[in-house]
Structure formats: structure tokens, C-alpha cells
Image: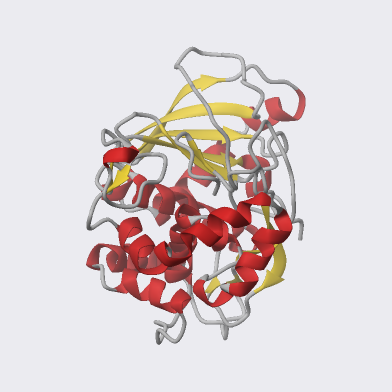
Length: 329
């Protein structure tokens, strides 16, 4: 969800332009029985108890091991944040949803889990690498947004987790080599490192981004130019937000690949991107795991909810980085 700068994945352009969720539902997409949203910011956490927050709303940090979480530290908080910190039952409920979504073999890449207040950063979720070699990652979930309207209201929290883990899935050490400098990289180079030849993101970039990369780079000069870029190439992207950069694109493609009920025909480039994932057995197995565990169903089921999708463009600046703010339903 952000510009491709190493550290946190949230929504950001290279010039501090943020994308916000649209409040419109995509009613021909697949529906979710339980409830979701996303974003983040850079963090450097140690394991001291009651450490001071760096101002991004940190509440409680957990260590992840074998699919379970163990508290590392409670941050020094007060007021509402203290109430949220004490509500460990909600922390565990959020984590249980993460475990339903992410198979244990994939969850090994996530070694830290942060509960935080998203009001401070205007974000609902984020991921950030915890080792320079990209082998370990932290995910953060904004507890206040996770329960806004009720736990996982309209499937927003689940979608956030799917999208955010899509970053870990496509930027970890199996997919990228962080030791190769950009000048020596022959493939796509997000700022985390050099994409490997057969990586998910390199395939997407070489086939569907390379021919428009210069135009995309120029479009970062203003919000209006970014909007024009999306409008010109809207058939290439599964959502408006996906046009932010290749990293956000592949995370949105992954989330759409998971949540849409029917396999696309490939009529547009956006659909062709989804078909790239259908060609990867590991990703198809991941999709099947999520859909089974979350009871994703067609829209004929009255107990299901339409998943939200990112959409409209707005401008915001925070700490030098722009953030994707949760849509207020």
C-alpha cells in the first residue's frame, strides 16, 4: 500500500499522493460471510516492555511463532489506547482471522504482529520487513478500524489482511534478492531488492508495466496526472488503487484473485494479470484455503457481504509519506 520504499508497505506515491477507499461496492464480485481494510507506516521496534510509541499509534507488539502470538511489549499509552491495549480478547480475535486467511507454511514469513490505533496515521493496516534479507516481516492491524461497525464489518478487515499479506507474499526473500543493487539488477527492482526472474512481481511487471513505466513515472507530478494515468489505462487495473505502482498492483490483483468467485476470461489486461495467478499452483492453493476458511460465497447468499474495493483519488500528506485512509461507510 504505498510507494516502493523498503520498510512499510502502505499506499504512497513517490510524491506524497495518497489513495483512499471508495465507498462504492462492486456488486458483481464475490461476497464474504464474516468482515476487513488496510495501510501502514515505518517502524523500528525492540522488545523492551512499556516502550514509548514512535507516534504512529502503536499499542501492543506480539511475536509470531508456529501460528501463535506471544506479547513482546505493551507501549506506553493512555485513554482510549489504554482501553484498546487491555482488550486482549480483541487482539486474539483479529489474530484468529489472520490465521484463517494465511496458511501456516506462508505465515512463517510473518514474525511480528502489531496492534495499533489507525487514527494516528489514518491507516488500517500495514506490513514492513524486519530483516534486511526480506525473510521476516511484521504486519500491523488498526484495532479501531477492525471493529468499526462491528468486527470485520462488510469483510473489510479480511480484505485488508489479504491485501497486506499479498505484499509479504510477493516481496519476501523467495521472490526478491535484497543483496543485489539496482544497477546490477536485470529484472524489476522495487526498492526492497531485485526481483528474481520467475518471481510473481517480475512477471507482472515485464508483461504489463514495462511499456507504461515512463508514463507512470511522469504521472507522479500531480494528483491530476495520476488520475489521468489511471483513466487512460483503467482496463489494465483491477482497482484504481492498483495503478499506484507495481507493488500495490500485484497486492490488489492477489486480493481480487482471491475474492472474485469466477475465473476471468482474460478480456482485459486486468483480467490477464489475474490469470497469471491462476497459472501458479501455490497461489491457487492459497486462494482455495482462504475461500474455504472465510466461507466466501456468491451474492445470492443473503448472509454474505460484498467486499469493498479501493477507488477514488484524494491527496494527503503525513510524515513525508502519503497514506491510504480507510473509507468511512
